[in-house]
Length: 436
Image 1 (cartoon, rainbow, N blue to C red):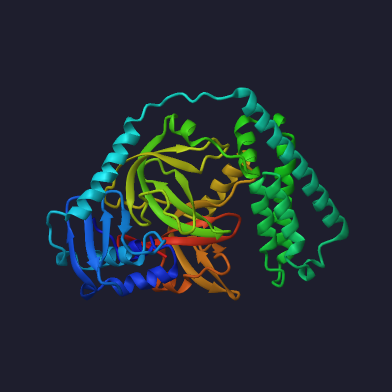
Image 2: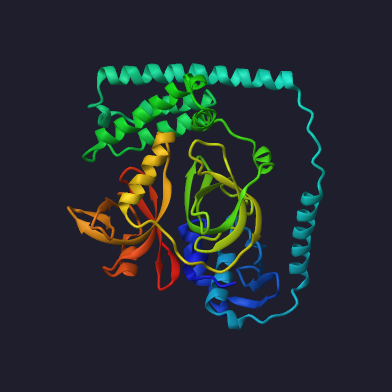
């Protein structure tokens, strides 16, 4: 296990945990520590009489700690792993203590039971299920009718007074979409509400998003005229979910996947983690999502930004497949050689190809062989080898870290975005992938 500081800190649930984890990456903070074939562990003296027992399953990158924190991983887990990444020689190879062995045994037992569990067919009341589906479709239909009236009324009256509106102008319709069981539309309406209406050019941003919502609704209302894959895309944008069990029964794509980055967002205590992956051999991109309630432990997704994993991924049905789930993780190999697109022109061509089959596509991830951050016309841009420029997304928080890695020179880079709005995820610097 060879992790950099950036890779360890990328696992932190928030900035305060990241800072506290750095403070605990100090041998003096640990009463005892050790490493075995499967785990890393340590005892950290806190304010109580007994030290906190911290343990890490190094094979699956799972954490457990006896501290009362509800964050995962907690500051003790981050501090222990960060200490090991900096000073591996200070950890003696030894037999794990009983509390670590018990935890590993319980994890192994749980995995065995899950693997051995019979795939019994669930008896489904098809009549009741059909009624539930019909009821939801009617709710969505009623909700989209109301949203269309809202859009038409807004366009008729004009948008110039939007900066004077308060959040309730959008909030009522957001809640209406939630009631209509259309969470995807609610999220798109929330993006309208979050636009900065006091910055130049807000009108273009607003109209683009409003048009997107309108097209989703009209596409959904006339989906019977569209290909099956595009119908599924529209249902997903509305907010209909897909069965993960059914997906896992399908054949997946096995590759060495590099974890290019992780983006975290939170809405009403629901945390969404977005992991961007890139297939070394297939040269395909993938987006793996994880959802959990703040304060509850998330499902173990052994994805550490900056590392690679050998895994079988199954893509969700789509006209332009991107979102995927991990069906089977085989092993975690070393980093592989970088491969990427040569210019922004190739990125635009890739987007054109996607847009031809799915015009409403969301952010994509791209790896580009040589990009240089440059300051031009009062904003930051990414310049490729052909001197073509694309703007960095406004508010990008890690511009100074990017400049420190670049030093004015081009770097291989991973970015995410679409339509002239890109956010760097990481760079390849001195033959190592660095998270931003």
